[in-house]
Image (cartoon, rainbow, N blue to C red; front, top):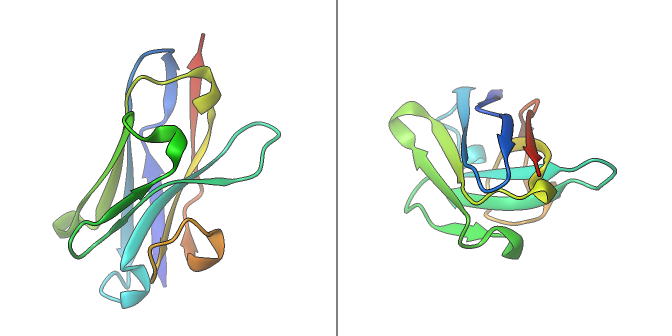
Length: 124
C-alpha cells in the first residue's frame, strides 16, 4: 500500500502564492505510482484535474486553467511532489488532493491512491 499526505494549504489573498506538498510513504518503489498528480474540488463542484508529473523524466501536464500560474515538481529522493501556486484567484478555492497512479492522465480513474486533501482558500 501507498499512503499520501498533503500539506501546505491555508488562507491567502488573491494574487498571492502557496506551495503544496504531498509526501508518499509505504510501497513507493512500485510502478503503481509512476505518476503523481494534483486534483481539486471546489465548493459545490466536482473534483477536477490540476496537474500531473512522471516520476521518471518529470514530464508534466496541466489543466488549461492553471497554465502559467501553477507549477508541479517532484523530489524522488523524498518521494514528494509539490504544487507551486502563484497569482491565486478566489476561484482556486478548493480542497486539493494528491493522487498517484501508473499512467499520466487527467482522468481520476487512472489513479489508485489518494490523499485526504488540504484546504486552499483564496480571499478577494
